[in-house]
Length: 454
Image 1: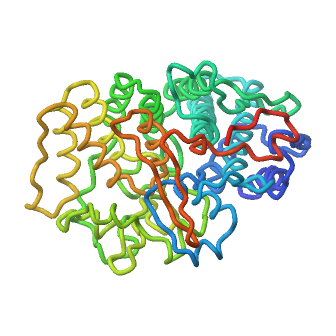
Image 2: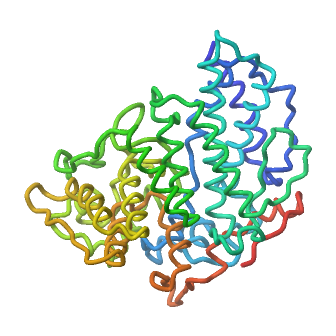
Image 3: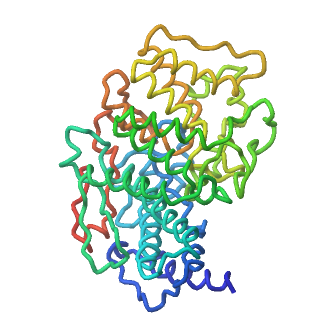
């Protein structure tokens, strides 16, 4: 009965939203068809991994980690080609999954939060009530975070109160007109939702597709890092690690396996804090004509086990997803927290501590007995080492695009990206407005929200 009930909920909401090219935020669902009424119903809705644990993937296609052949680009979907080449018109009057899926998650979460208002919390249900509410708040924050990294400018403290963020839907009622919040309001809402979720969620969820306290801290630390708030990012990262297991020893993995990492669901892969994965773009999961950037591949030395665990040695195709299968992992993991802590320490002029953190991580990535601890003379050297290893260690996690956006604000780290296709060269300048994806045109037409500059 539970599965049938969940199917009714899922089918109703999904049929309304998927396959509809009208502006997602303006679609008017028939809420008489929605049946969740009890805490059990609401938790089933939040447990829908096919929706709640999917993230955008276009930011990976647009970043500098992978290269594609001309023949692949010529034959692939226009959406992927346009993203790879940073074209002005990415979506060609369509609304992509990278917009629809996060807002569908927001809609689910808001329905749960709205319905919870009508359910009395008492001693008989307080644990379940708090868990369900905490899940809804986390998933809403997670969706807003994903949207902000594609459809809003990178965070700059000097302009965040005037830069446009994303539409913040905080209730399920779609009759309320959509408007774009400021970037400051967007990040504030994400942090507020995560802080509220932290209080309500258990320390450890029973499966990794659900958030717990560690997931709220890991995502909050990531958001603080994007904001340049290194003190709070460091605090969140250290507290997060108190809830999480130790790092994996890559020496215990089989590099000839495809894929070599344990399956993360329901409770595999000790480093995974929260499981999510990208939408299945062919660029990310299937084509042998998409390979790791040559310069990046060459930066892995032979005793670095990441080289053989992350990539097929003959094709240079990425195989190292923490999902444990071909779909690309974009969740929260312990190794990211180590990199975050090390970077924050370096930025706070605590170079020795930063290098200790970095070496603790890397020692689990090198062949036993071959790792030579890194050294840094000062915080600047430590920061350079951390950022270099972060790029290599977190490849294809969906994080590089956000790193490019934030690091390009610092002349020390700003870079230009270049690609060639059919004899033409495409350049993405470090200060380019094309680091922000356009709002899908149907949303502009139906809601009247302001379009991003391209």
